[in-house]
Structure formats: C-alpha cells, structure tokens
Length: 468
Image 1 (cartoon, rainbow, N blue to C red):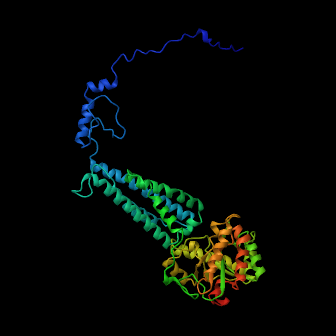
Image 2 (cartoon, rainbow, N blue to C red; image 1 turned 90 degrees about the horizontal axis):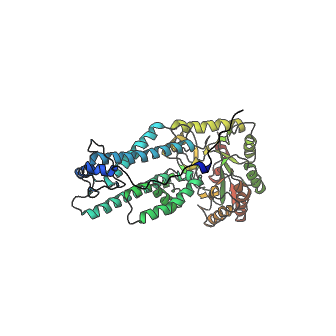
Image 3 (cartoon, rainbow, N blue to C red; image 1 turned 60 degrees about the vertical axis):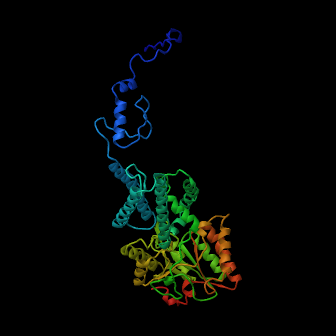
C-alpha cells in the first residue's frame, strides 16, 4: 500500500522577517561610476553630435537613447538616415504590394500579372523613399533650406510632407475614379465603414499643434478616405469622347437615344431572385436587359443541375435582352488582353449552349473599361454599355433602406434624363431589389407615360443585332 506523504503543518514552519539592511556590496551604478562609464558614454554622445543627457551621475538611461556597442562608435548620422528611410519606405511599399495582390485576387483577375505588380511596388518604394529621406526630420537633415532659422525648419518640413501626402492622396482618388475602382469599394461596405471612421481620426491628427511627420505617415492612408468622403464615393463621369447616342463600338455607351423610354438593366445574375424580377416585368409587359455572369455562385450558368439555364431560356422567350458581364466579374481595365478574351469567350460558349446564341452587348464589371479594354471589346464585336442612372440598390439592400433607392430613382426621373430617356443600373441578385425596388420602378415608369425597354431598343438597334 502506498503511504501518504505527511505535509508539514503551518505551525511547524518557521517564519523570518525580510532583510531590510540594504545591499552589503557595491551596486552596479556605483561600480559604473568608479570605472568612469558614464563619462565615457557622455563623451561618445558628444562625438556623435548629440546633446548630453546630463552630468555623469548615476541615473537611469532615458528612453529613446540608442544603445552603443562597448567597442564601437555607432553608425554615422548619414547612415542612420538611410537606414531609417529604408525601414519606412520598404514597410509602406510592402503594404502597397500586399494590398495590390489582394485586390487583384479578390476582385476579378484570373491570374496576377506579377511584372506589373512589381513595377508598381518599385514605383511606390521610390516615392516613399523620396518623401522620407528629404522631408522626415533627422539629425543628419537638420535644415531643409540653408539660412532659414531652425525654428522654421521643422514647420517647413512638416508642411511639405503633409502637402506631398495630400497631393499623392488626391492623385490616387483621381486614378481610382478614372478606372472606376470606386465601384469595387461600393460593393465592399466594410471597407467603406473603416474609411468613414478613419476620416475624423485624420482631421484630429492634422490639427494637433505638435504633430510630427511620423504621425502624418501613419495616417496617410486616411487621405484617400477623406477624398472618398468629400467626393461622395461617385465614379468620375466618362470623357465626352466616350459618350455616344448610337450602338457604336470602341466607346462607352451611357445614354439612350430613343426618347420616352427607360432601359432597366440588371447586373450580376442570374440568381435566386431573378425569377421574381421576371414576374414583375411580365405583369407590366415590360422588357429589360440582364447582364449576366458565367460562374455564378460556384457553378456555371450552363450547368443543368442549377436553375440558371431555365432562367436564361425564360429571359429569351419573354423578349428580354441578355448581355455579357464577363465570366467571373473581372475588372477589364486591369486584365491583360488574354484574360479579357478568356472572360468574354468562356461566357459566350456557356450562353450559346443554353439559348443557341451569344450576346453583342457588354456591361463591364465595376463600370470599368479603359482604352485597351474598349479596343479589345470592339475587336470582338461588343458594344460596351454603362448607365446614366445608378439606383445604388447595392447600398440599400434592406427593408429599412430600400426606400432610399426608390426615392433616388423617382428624383432622377423628375430631372427629365438625357433627352427624355434613362439607362438604369440595378441588380437582380439582391433580395430587396427584386421584391420592392423593381415593382416600384415599373409603377413609376408607366405612371409617367414612359416605357420600360431593352438597351438595344433604347438605342434604336434591331433585335437581329443583339446577338451573334
């Protein structure tokens, strides 16, 4: 049998008082003072051009002082400046690189074009390096302008750094508007929420009387947020050269040219709510255009095990127009030519297998199609169609907020539109669009004496030209 260990009782333990007599030997600080280590440290700081931390007395080392090797003099200020520049620049450029790759993977590119990604990384690294090296305060860079009093040098550096960051942020806003990347942001509400929260943070940081360039660098990303807030998140209007009144190729069509009509268009389908949209259209004998994706909800639209083929056949039988929205919702402005052809031709093949024909009309995802895209689409025989009325239903897909999309649509009709006609963007993949917004729009359209038609009809293009 195992025997139990008998623990000593509390009464058998002898207690002792703590020793408060103090150290019996010399302390480390006393030993350092005897050996003159504090004086040696002060001497080294003097050689490096730094201000002395005080007399050579035993005292704790202040936070912020750099540790020196016992047998070395440390890095020269010029080398430290270069190293600090590399630290900031490479860190920010890698953040740029990471976001670049993530966006391309998540938003529509089948394969990342690595040479272009690395080129953008190098450009970002160059810009960040210039900003930090010339405008970030450093002992090796005490003055930006020779002869200017030192009390103005820091203010000047901070002002130039802030102005450069603002210009860079505004330019970023400009190019995102030009290539319609804001449409990506509008489809990602969490990102928009983060941007909205970061705006007041940026304003507060900017108004601090003692803010440093390091603080500004930390909050540089919010410059874009402020621009998005001020611009209202709207994509920039297309250049006048891209507007046309007919079903032309090589340009972006944004308006109808037949008066008295409303061309309702629905993107991102087919989906489980598309049949409800078709039911509402049938009630008014109205026609619409559906710009469809091929790889919808993990299965292709020609897959017989899904409801998508029957929905496409119903669209065609009912006289609605079917257009292309690419195979996997790719941003055609940042795709290469090979990827663009893949996105278009793969969808063509699937649509042909279902309805026996392929569309000649395209709605570019994110409303994004630059000159290279337009040239490729024209070569493949496509009309590129955007819109002049955005219902913003993707922002109001809830019972409580869909009313904003309704009132916005009615307010736009009140303006008279472009020559008395309207080219409307909505999404049949959204529940509250199909259940609430579509019947509301149809009722409003016919109450005003207008007609709901396809894009081809609003452009005066015969049905025979809609497909090939």
